[in-house]
Structure formats: C-alpha cells, structure tokens
Image (cartoon, rainbow, N blue to C red; front, side, top):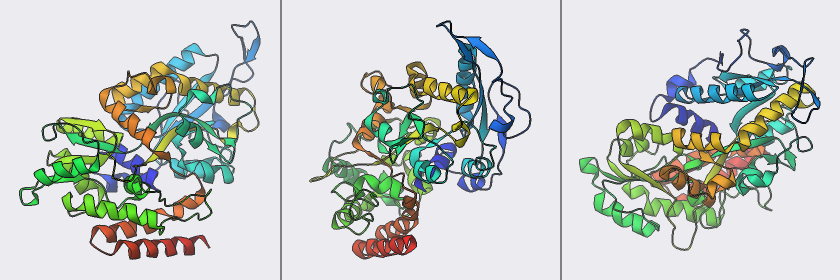
Amino acid sequence: MALNRRTLLKNLGVAGSAAALAGCVGVQESSSGESDGDSGSSGDSGSSSDETTESSADETVEAGSASVWYSLPEPEIPGRKSALELFNEESKHTIKGSDISDMRKKTTSAIPAGQGPQSFEWAHDWAGDYYQRGFVVDQSDQVDVDLDVFTGAAREAIQFNGNLVGLPHDAETVALVYNKDIVDEPPETVADMVSVMEEFHDPDNNQYGLGMPYADGYFLSAWAHAFGGYYFDDSADERIGVALPETIEGVQFTVDNFVPYMPNDPAYEPQAAAFAEGNAAFAINGPWYLSTLNDKGVNYGVTKLPTPEGGSPKPFTGITMWYFTKAMEEGGADAAAGRSFIEWYATNEDLALKSAEEQGSIPVLKSLVESGDLPENVQGFSEAVQQGQPMPTHPDMGKVWDPVKAALTKAFNGKDVKKAMETADAEIRSNLE
C-alpha cells in the first residue's frame, strides 16, 4: 500500500529502497529498561502488575508494565528514547519500547500468537484490516481523552466503523516545495505555477519545472480528487471511482499541466533527485523529503498545493497513531499502562512541538495547528493537511494501488488516460470479486 512505500521513503531519503526491502526482521531495544533478548512482547514484558502505588488523589492504583513497538529512522530514535524515559520517570507505570524493522511481518505473526505489544505505532491505513482480523481493538469506553483536541482528519482516521482503535500524534501528506533561488514567491494557483515552470524548464541543460513521483497514486491523489473524483470510497454508492469522469479529469489535468515539465522517468528517485540536486523549480513531496533537502543544502520553502481552475486539490493524508492491540482487550494493569502512555504521548504539546521543530513532524493537536507557532516549513505541510482527506482504512483499498500505478505510468508515457483508467478500474473490480 502507498503508506508503506511512503514510510520506507521517509527512512531512506532519495535512494536505497532496495537495500531496505532486503532487510531482515528484528527488534532493537530502544527505551529505558533492559532488553531480555525477545521481541518485547506483552507475554514476557516483566509485568509489575502485582505492585501498587498511590496516586495524587490518594487512591491505591495498580502499576502496570507495557510494551510498545515503533519503526523509526535512526535520527529519530534518541528522541523516542527520551520520551519513554520521561514518561517512566513521571508515571507509576513502566513502558518498554522496541524498534521493529518490519512492522507488518512482526505484528501479523506476534499479535495472533499472544506475543504482541500493548501498542504499536504506524499510519492509520492499517486500521480496517487489523480491526477485522482482531489485531487491534476498540478502547472507546476506556480512553480518558476528549477527541475534540485533535483535528477532524485525525479523529476520522483513528476510528473504523465507530470503533476507536488508537490515538493520533502527527500527520503526513504532500505539499508544494519550491526552490527559493528560482521562485520569487510561492504560487497560489496552478496557472501561476505553470508560468514559472515554463520559464525555467530546459531539459537539455538538466533543468526541470517539477519533480513529482508520478507513478504512485498517493502523490497523484490531490489531483485525482481535485474535480470530485476518487479512487475508492466505501461510503459511496459506487465504491470504485477510478474510471469516473471526475477522476479521469483530474489525471488528465496532471498530464496537461505537470508532465511536460518533469523528468522523463515517473518513479520516485529520479523525480525526487531533480529537485534535491537543485535542478527543478518545484517538487511535490512529503515531510520525509526535507532531511534530504537539508543534507543537500537546498534553499527551499513549503506551501500548500496550488489551486487548479474549477477545482480544489485534496491530497491523501496519513495519520500516524498508536494502535490499541489485542493485548489490551482483557484490561488490567498492563493495558492501563499502555493506554496511559498513549494518552500522554498523543496529547503532549511539548513533545509535539519539539518533534515539529527537530523532525518536521506535522502536529494533529488543534491547539498547535491553530497557534501560528509552528516552524515555517511545517506550517506549509500543516496547511496542506487541512486541504486533504484521510486515506481510506477499508482493507479493499489495498487492491487499488497497483492497478492505479499501472494506469498512471501509461498516462505519463502518453497513453490515452481514459482507457488506462478504465483498464485499472476493471482490474480492481475483478480482484475484489
């Protein structure tokens, strides 16, 4: 699925995906507390649930021990360790964190075997699949957080069929990145953007108007949705929208307005490299891309996506969340420990602001989103998130990505857009039968 690829790209920057895909599964202890050499599972978490401590309300409260899993690029692990240590110092509970190299493989094997953690961190697009398979559970009756503290997109993303399966802590989407040495001011409309691209584009001299990973439906989603279209909507009478006239219009719009100014390979790496090497005026990419730009010394800015005439860009948004796993279903002190950590992490303004400043994370706490205090580039992505819509959580969405990728590749290479999208639509429907 797209968010899986996107998370991989976040860890890698522009290059190195093949090496990461070849990586083996393993657990690296990355929190306070000693590793016992296992997977950090709830079954061997060293629970202290028989211990008690007194709360500030002078009530006897059972202390618990919980395990949480995450998968982070190396530079972000120290910050996560610090957060876990801070919680453990302040709380009666103990949380042990583990960095997981292949989260899907590890969760789908450990959780049904009763060896999973109380929580794991991942994007929201697994919510439907994991809930239906019993890997994550509803905790709506247990959580002591007013969901109104989060943005609307975040509230929507953490629920599946009315079940609260986790709490959110940041968002991801794509925005317009521009080279400040080339672009005087960020364009508000696509027409303005095209004017700049026309002036700068000179492929014979390795200059391009735009670098955008075209063959990925995630990056194209803003434009596929811009005129009322969609790939998949389980709430619509017509669930599969790939061949709708509005969706085709959106893809055709990108062929007419973006493709002429792009490098001739639609894949991620050549598109991302064009801007990262200072050879493109614009890029459409996500916050994971900024570390590459910083390393390359690009003088860049970030702004929301420009408006096409007669439409409105609506990029897919991903919400990173802490899931409530099956290990919390029976309740008890360890489940309370995991829930307490998740509530603390998801609502901690200081943590969210520090993550925004140091890692470019996009907060989902309304108090920060509306504060005007976010770093400039994070603010640009935050505004793009507000343009967007959460990626569908329904498991059938997984059948959409590959046929759409094939159709977009054809469109990029000059094939008839309508025929390409109709072929993809037929393949998706066949796969869902």
